[in-house]
Length: 498
Image 1: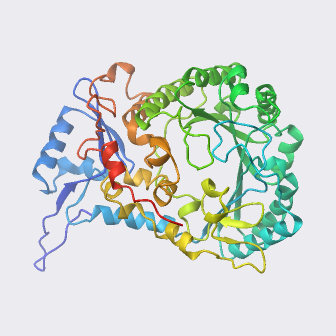
Image 2 (image 1 turned 90 degrees about the vertical axis):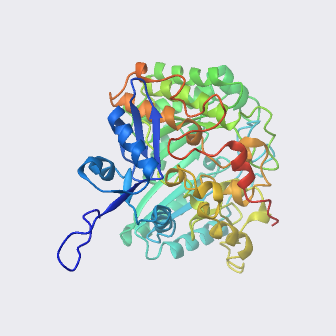
Image 3 (image 1 turned 120 degrees about the vertical axis):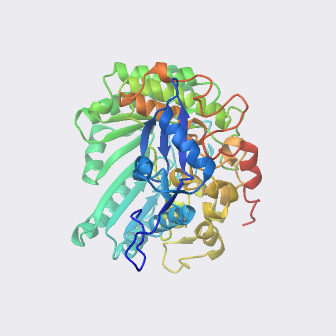
């Protein structure tokens, strides 16, 4: 509150304010700036007078509150001078991270896959095993045990290719849904699939299993995609995937999020995906959206990272592709996340269950039994390696000097804990550097958001001053300079032995 305190004589004490450490400014033409606060998520356009007032506040530190600062305070760009802003953000983070009312689980009913993608982080030699009836029974028992007392539950189906073991999906979903319905627990579910087996009959069963969204990867037009994401036999998959998406979304059975993997050679292919989807009449209006992700080497058995883009190069490509996807109606207005890194891996009592019943904390470790943290099977110690699980539970971005001082902390939340906890396991900058692409193209994403709202036009972009990554190679925000890539590397935790 900024109303101030009252002295014993009834007079009002003076309130002092200070600038928020989480304010990001994007310079525009004509002495205007986009202003965004990563903690309050306020978004504004400032003119030259606003900037002058802001700069004076930054230069002089805490100032007595007056009406001229009211807009800054209301937007969260300023706060009470006595407030510990980092601790405020930490409290919000911990509240979400340790919120026991919501449960997240990921189940990989099989690690087998009908595709032979050369860049797959799980490697090409995947096991063919599926969940046995006994593992399914133990998995259901474990889920029901974990669901007790919850208010909401989100289940992600993962693989391999999860549709290679559909029996497990229908079996486990049925019992979990019945328990949630009987106990007033909100149930939601999604799936990571390659889309090849996602026919209309399968999608109808998925809808019954309350899977509402499926993520499917498409890596270019037919020729490009089929060269990268073909069946293990070598046969192409593009035409069938597009047909499945078209037919499933036409019946409103599922929404589809198309993931396009980006490396150093395929920006043109990514543009071709957007052209193809648009030509098929697919888009947000019928439940199809697109997002982009970098190809990274994040496992010892992956094929390497020779074609991986650097973080800054990927962010540059991503910005161009997001602009095009937005124009084609395949991407909504960019929205800044809050605590992006709060995934299953760092939330206590949330796990990934693999076909043999082992429990993992992270999707990226499912091929490595030495990284498991327990098992759902009776007779096994539920938590077999408390040390590994403790590494996940004890890790916090607030304990890292770079993260705790970063302007993007309320947005990022450490991004990828795997790249901290197992920093020695991945390879290349893309695989080892935790920071999300947003750190390297935030100005571009904010500008696209403002343009979508009609606040700015292309003429407002200042080619020299507006970009996130300047020619000097440093990343700039405004009040607080984002750390250089080398500084981030230097502050990473050292390799940890299992």
